[in-house]
Image 1 (cartoon, rainbow, N blue to C red):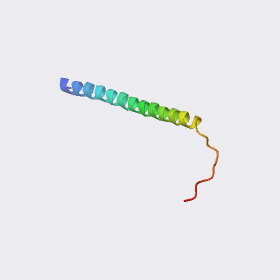
Image 2: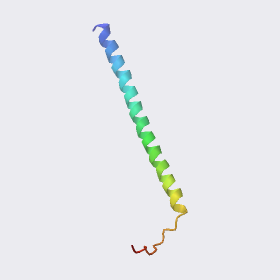
Image 3: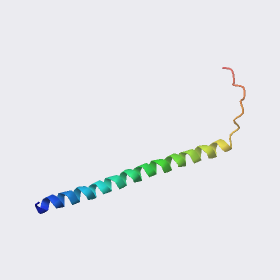
Length: 58
């Protein structure tokens, strides 16, 4: 086979590896963001009185 076939396969393999790594990093960031949002919600709810109280009539 010509050399350019091997070079093309090598470049495609490297590009696929970077694509997989980027996809994993993106999912990891989404997971961290979700955890961060959940933590912030928990912190806000801690200080709130969540018991039911009567609503003001309009």
